[in-house]
Length: 398
Figure 1 (tube, rainbow, N blue to C red):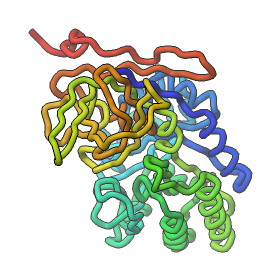
Figure 2: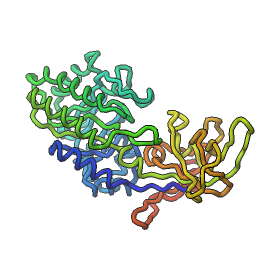
Figure 3: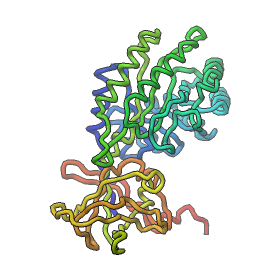
Figure 4: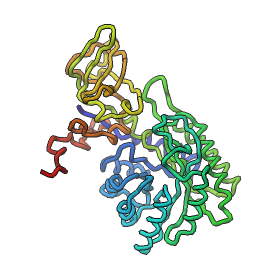
């Protein structure tokens, strides 16, 4: 299997333009969990974006790619002491604190190093973004963030402001992903900013405000997402109006697109192998990849389109199910899709595969992860080679 990924600089520029023209004091930070490697991280920096990381591994990639540390935001609900030490030693811009334990550990680490670290707090506003239950993050029953409803948010804000070695400079929330509606963002901005007013007299400085990311893309023709301009108009309008009304001035507005930048840029290419026709039931077309390189259909029920890339002009002829090669009955990439007659050796292309497919890939059944090729204007270069059997044993001790 070969996966071709085309990093979407155009989408990055569109995010910068649409948010920047409406709210000049804004920053777009690419959510690297969607997919990052050194080549992607360099493009992110070249496009003038910040970087949102959620692990020491993602931070290591950023450092290897020479991403400016002051443009990095470190998220995550359970950062280890080693990851926090790595972040402070690299001098990253903001650490987005997600628990009381982290507040205490980070304060101690900063004190040991004799530094004062800028932080943001992740709040949970108790808002349902109407997305998949496994990717909804802004509700009460979530592992992420300090809940407004339970009083943890108030406790965390006061604890952060009193910390000896931390400087609370901003507030973050994230509602989930992908979000196909605008109303959740508007409600989230309104709830959080109104909530924060009670802490102004206690010394809260809102220098940075982030409503996160979660911006959707189109996976199937029947579910088009809002345009980037629509997201920008909704978020900046509510942020500007409420910050002015509530006396917060014009804090730096940070948005964190990931899927919406790299998702549509990625096209996964598969080679057809065995075909099994069960009359009156289903016709399975087996591909040389599957849940090991795209787990989303198996765990989220995600839907995709597919085309016969090797014969694009062939007319549709039959309904087939595109199955993977992994030893799971649930290893199905696209169920019951109308396609031309497919033969072994044909190439199937599945678009919108750039986000959360390569980053969530595994070596299940000890299959190697596929190569990734960057392509633009007729030129192509390899940015990740195909894994070998030897690669998969490199960490094993014989």
